[in-house]
Image 1 (cartoon, rainbow, N blue to C red):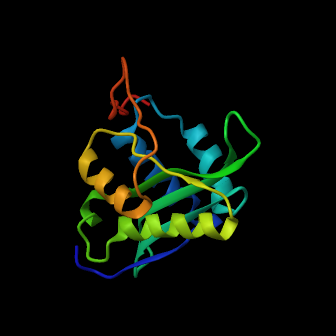
Image 2: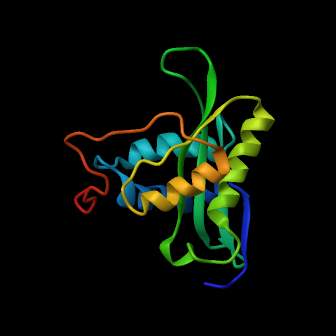
Length: 162
């Protein structure tokens, strides 16, 4: 795809397309069956800028082809707030579009962290093109701090029966 894409802040009008992006991200990356209710619970407040924010990637016609959702949450062991990346997802047919959109979504996440004055925690929780994603995140965020291991689970669970 060579068409010009636009990155902007998500709004409540974007709820359904962003829900679709989140569902597609789960279809590709999840290790557990997804719950549309849980996806809605996480994403809708961010699209209303309530304890989070969303960024959306659109065609000039307005079709949403990518999204990222960031949530303001507390670390499980502290009252410290963090900005947690729920997901970054770009439709496969737009991943090679000129513009470095995944990088721009990472830059958006960093700017939101700086603007809010709280740490950003972002991660890669899948096994599809993992090395390329790790290189992108290392270029954007620096050296990783920890790693995830799956035991008795695998990313990319079959979501067709949800």
